[in-house]
Amino acid sequence: MKSDCRRIEILDELRGFAIAAMVVHHFFLDVGDVLGLQWGYDVFNALCVVQPLFWAIFIIISGICTRLSRSSVKRGLIVLAFGCIITLVTAVIMPKIGIEGAEIYFGVLHFLGCSMIIVGLLMPLIKKIKAPVGMLVCILMFLITYGINSRELLFGLVELPIPKTNILAPLGLFNDSFHSADYFSILPWIFIFLFGAFVGEYAKNGSFPEWCYKKRSKVFSFVGRNSLWFYVGHQAALYALLYAVLGIMTLYYKTKL
Image 1 (cartoon, helix red, strand yellow):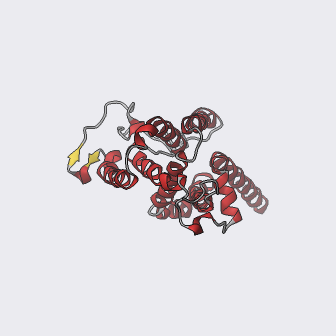
Image 2: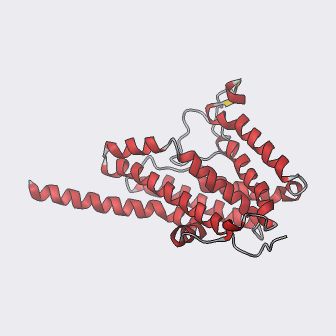
Image 3: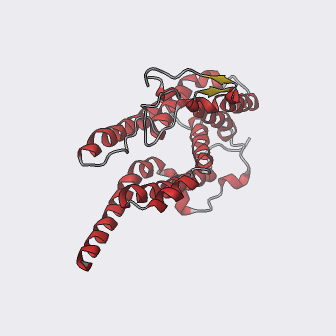
């Protein structure tokens, strides 16, 4: 068996790449929101086609890391706390300074925090299931529940009733009154997280291919190792940049009048 002490560099690099892709994606949305430029929305909407791929990479890696973490539950509580802080900022503080429509009630940090806690608590059971079996079941369950946000299961064969309240929004069921600028429901995405947890058995055993342990990009590796901070801070940085651009544009046009 290979040593399990070596850092799996490809995980940091892929996670860093996924975060970078997310920042670029959000940048175009902010161009539309802050600068009022329609092409920002157009590019953002076009990139939505590939967005699930980047998030799947990020979520799978987070699941893998539950096998490498000393305490997945503790880590999950920390991530969930950051998610709650983001809710406080976007839903309470930002509207008071005139920024509305950016409220985040159950975003990716809420999802990841809950998933880390759930999987951490279920880890004794997960360890009893053979990895290939668990991975296959997770893929099937993800496909079965993928349409839950549209109130559909089994590829549209089962239609779910419209909830009267949004109390089940974290699970994926909500009505038309629910809005969250960033939204990642526990279903179906926890099955992608669990898929990663089963893959993590091979990571824990040091069974990944040799090339996975070699560093290729210092930038993506750095971003991947500090992904939580990049995610928490990226929107504030983008807003600051774009509002500075807006201020310069406003000053420029005033001088032209």
